[in-house]
Image 1 (cartoon, rainbow, N blue to C red):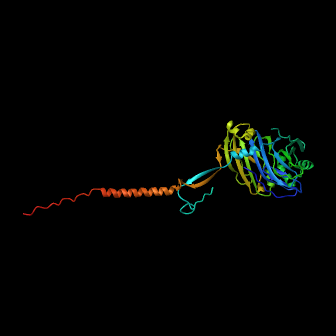
Image 2 (cartoon, one colour):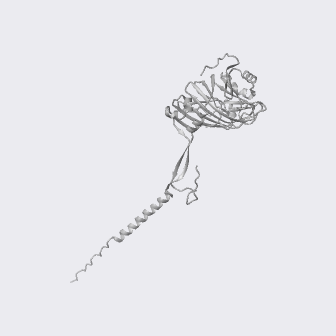
Image 3 (cartoon, rainbow, N blue to C red):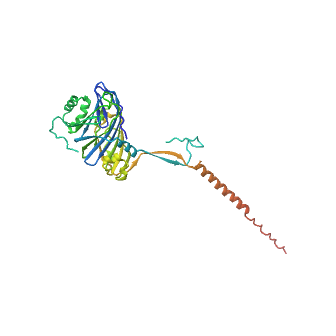
Length: 364
């Protein structure tokens, strides 16, 4: 479950991500090749763990993400994504069919193809810095903003170049008094380009509903693909497609506590070792400019488990022989045996003697 983004260059470009925007200098380019997101919610607190894989010639970039309440930011555990990939991986099963098909003998040859804090007060200053820290290669600034222009000014003063399109896209979040996480991304080697898979980041904030910010993705100029791992008490689903194709569930299942959770230590650390229902969701956005809101996720009517299964169809055989051929041979043998037995029974049947001839008495 991955968000794959292939984006072209813009003047003072803003590259849309699944739940944020990437900003670089005018003379630089960056592409977010891949984004994996894990969203957890316990009814009052939401966590988002995301990992970006980027390439380009930018010596540094900024990533901006709106959040409904004040967020804490920590480095995440990269093992979380490999554990969830293993847990939700599709399974392969074999299905047998009896009668031969076009590629089977005698029609054709064999074919073995496998198939938590409080929100900012409404009368706060236009922009406030509520926290700043260094996390590995990241310089993280947590901001409040009630004016998009003020937010743009602060980011510009601190080296972030904010395009007009992104400022406009941020306005609904400002009107709702959301806060922002602004992160300066830098390469491991100073002076080099920003390349490869970055360390995952873990955001945590209070929320009375499960929301995944998607509105900034409408800035993208190419089709978008969203992949989410959702961890909650029940199976979850988006309230609507928000301008994309219908979301598709690729996995749904509950993982318990104790030994079962212990098999996935990074997942257990994120959930506190408690039972959790895992829902993996894929969705595509052929025309991202149609995205009209954020994903609000809700519990489904029933916690029905599901797992993507790929089937490989094989001709049913008994040893090296097709079952249909053996059945025909057996059937032919049974018919032949019945005929033979009938003939034998007829030959052994005793021939009844002719009835005696009665001579009438002479006439007198």
